[in-house]
Amino acid sequence: MVYKMVFHVDGGCRGNGQTGSIGAAAATLDTRYGNQHSHKTQQLSSYYHTPTNQRAEIQAVILALEWAQEKYRGLDTTPELDITIYSDSKYAIGCMTDWIYKWTRNGWTNAAGNPVANRDLIEEASDLDDWVKDRGSIQYIWIPRDQNTNADRYCNEALDEQENTQWSRTYYTDSSDDY
Image 1: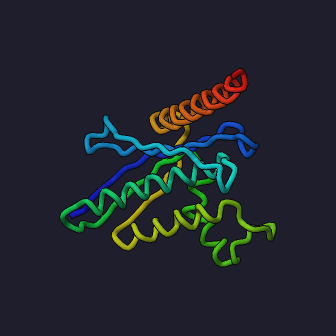
Image 2: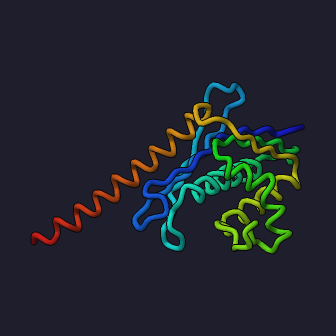
């Protein structure tokens, strides 16, 4: 038996790489009938790393892979996995299908000889990818942005929510000075 999962992922950042930037990741899981889906979102923490679009895109891949792992572990059987992840990020697709193999051979340095950006997230995604490959197969497929509308919408909703929460906290802090 094969357990098939199809995800669409998207990551985004507002204020890309700047102090105070916010980031979010989203993943949708298609139902077996293809016209409905469920979704998960995650806000990017700025505690260790300033959010960027690239970090958000890799985090979206991680979100989908963790979700696949969670669903698989909830099964009563251990079928072969067949996972497809669609993304409109050429960066995320390149990381997972091509560049990671070069970087590991080169000691995590890029073509310019510099340390690879986002290594922490790429390694995390790679570990999850290996977990899937031990149980079946996985494909990463680039799609145009207009074919990724649901994941994009959920990502933007998570960014809006984060932005509104941030504004509320700022407003509250500013208004508390009046007392």
